[in-house]
Structure formats: C-alpha cells, structure tokens
Length: 313
Length: 99
Image (cartoon, rainbow over all chains, first blue to last red):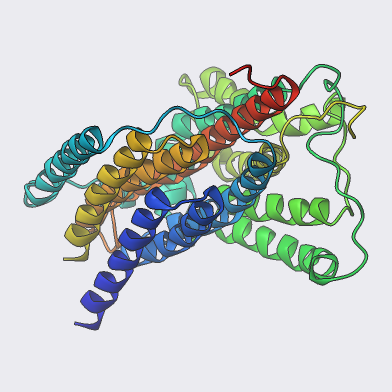
C-alpha cells in the first residue's frame, strides 16, 4: 500500500515537472524544472527495480545535463536566437489533441501487453557464469549485447568530434569551452577542492563493484566527468588544447581497445567480440576501465563545448 | 502494478514532450521537450523490463541495459544540439538580424 502511494506521488511529481518544463515562460525556469524531473526519474527507476539505470539517470540527466543546460540558458539569455512564431490557439489545440491521442495509443499498448510477459531474465541468468560477471546488466552490456555498448562508445566519440567541429574561425586547436577565472573564495572554491578526491574514490568503487552489483563504467564515467567539470568551473583545471594528441588518444582509447579486442575474438574464437573463455574476466576488466576513462573525458568535453576564438579568450 | 503505472506515466511523458516540441518556439525548450519525449520512451521500456522480472531479478536485464546505453547516447545528442544552438546565437550576435 505504501509502495503504491510512493509510486503515485513520484509519478504525479514527474508529470507536474514535465508539464512545468513544457509550459515555463523562461528557459531558466524550464531548465530548473527539467533538472528536478531528472532526479525524480532516478527515483522512478529505483521503484522499477533498475538501480543501474537510476545511478546513470541521476549522474547524467540531473548532473551533467543540468550543468550543460544551465550554462546554455545563461548564454542564450545574453544573445538570443531568432525564434519562429508560436502557433495560434486553434493550431495549439489541434496539436494538443493529436499529442493526447499519441499518449492514449501508447497507454493502450501498455495496458494490452501480453500475459505472461516475455522475458530474457531466465536466459540471462542461466548463462551469466560464462561471462565471469555477477551483475546481469553488466553481463548484457559487456557480453550478450557487447556490440551495442561498442557502438554507444563510438557515438560518444563522434559527438565530441561534432561539438569540436562547431569551433568558430580562429578557435580550432584551442582550449575547449569558455575559460573560467580562478575562484579563490566561496562555496565553489571549497567544493572544487573538497569533492574531487571523494568523487574519484566513489567513481572507482562504482566501477569495480559494477561487475557483481549495480554500477559500472557509465556511472563511474559520469561521476569522474563531474569532478573534472567542478575543478574546471572553479578555474583550478585548464583542459588541454583540442589539438593535443594525448587528449585525442584519451577520448578514443576505450573504443579503440574494445574494437581491437572484438577483432581478437574473430581470430581466436571465430566471432566478433567473442572472448576466449580463459581470458574473459581480464579482457572485460580492461575494456571496462579503458571505456570508463575515455567516456569520462568525452562527457566532460561535451559539456565544455568547442574552443572559443583566441582573441575573445 | 508499479510497472503499469510507470508505463502509463511514460506514455503521458511522450505526449507532453511531443506537445512542447511542436508548440514552443524557443529552441532550448524544444531540446528539453525532446528529452522529455525520450524519457517517456525509456520509462515505457523500463515498465516492459519490470514486467519481465524473473529468475530472482527485479526486471529483465536486457531492456535495462539498453536503456542505460540510451541515456548516455541521448545526453551526447543533447550536448551536440545545445552546442549547435550556442554557435547559432554567437553567429546572430555577430551579424544583427536585418529585420
């Protein structure tokens, strides 16, 4: 009974925050609603028994997205972009009706899902010993659906290339993002010195326990990225220039290693991304650590943005 | 029970996000609305995963892992969209609109 009450409260709050985001007058208000929505969504994931997703949602949606969107909202308020005209009341009502119909159709699909529900849980658990992992979600990510994880890591690298390619004239090869002056006083200066050591330990813990408990490379990478961004915001850590070979290697190392191990599987076991049984655990740990590092660097660079022209910096 | 409830919440979020995407002229609000839509799709998938609970697990791990990668990809796409928008604003600041 209390469970149902909690679900109803969380659901109502998420719904209200989503409606608030869509109807907010200013971009700042909408962003604030959206961050709160991300945090509550993490609670919803816990209620759905998906702690792995909850950790990712809290770290990425509420943490990194919040920083990215708040920064963007303040810069857009300073120099706004020309907007299209908003649709009139009749068109708005029509769009509203159509969107309600889409929601109703998805809702109907949810209510008419087959009984008993099809599930791969039995099979995932039955073969989990082969993957040398104890966390079934990690087993899916690293073994059963390793190809998805590889492609996902490649998408993050491509997104960084896409963001960098938006560098304005005179900016290419420079330091990514706006330059923050060093802050010596106030809460940010304190937190930027106090939190990173703790955050790094927590991130490594989450990375290590990810093989048999909720956690893993994505969650750890998001926390590591947040720690770097904290030091960056306080002006304590200047990111390397994007022309730096070491930075580029750091971003692509995880995906590259994963790809190389996948090709090694072709030679050793006759299938892409097949791990030789004796080496399974070692190879997976190598990929987990390399991907965590690369994704952490890439996520932080995505929030920092492209380099600014040298003359403005 | 909670699976159906969150599934319906996901369906509602899809509609709300779609509405914001089509009705709000602000670019940043459109990006936020698109993320609401995506969050709704993830929740629907999460509800399906929850219904597939079995073998001592609270949910089917396969959709759960896919949602996990989806969240990271959605963030990467959002960051790219936001950076495109910021570049647009920098360009329009340089060249004032003739109208």
